[in-house]
Length: 187
Image 1 (tube, rainbow, N blue to C red):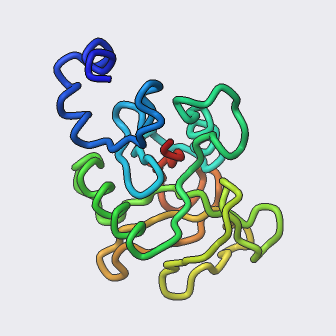
Image 2 (image 1 turned 135 degrees about the vertical axis):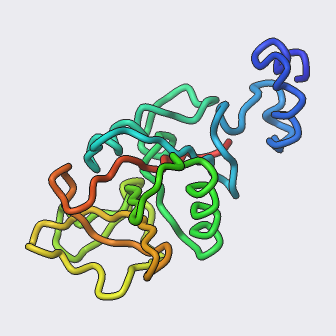
């Protein structure tokens, strides 16, 4: 295991081995989180920044990643915009965002998450197909302002903290969304 990681990651092998705990059965396949992804619980997360990214483009970017030790690509082993299922996961994502985002001065930061009601208004669902078991909507949210806000964002605003807001899924919304967080199962 150490030799394989040394060949793949060079000097980072020692650090990576300390951060990723692998089940004994996966030693030969060297599975876990891919490089540059951060583990939390049973998943891996990665923050991305793209100028004027739509919700659909962000979701498609996340779907370009799959579980590294899986030979088939199914909905269950593809990456997706992050789903959030507990206050602990929400707090983890807050720290991930704060430690990896672009440090430019901004009064309002907006990050796409995988929650949408594009199919049926008011019936929010996660793009990874998991159940909605936790929410952290801001005050008076979701409000579908103008009748076309169908995608959720994780937002930092000084008066509301890290809460969710529904926005137009395109780039023509009141806030320019330039980042998103992908989530991938860790195996």
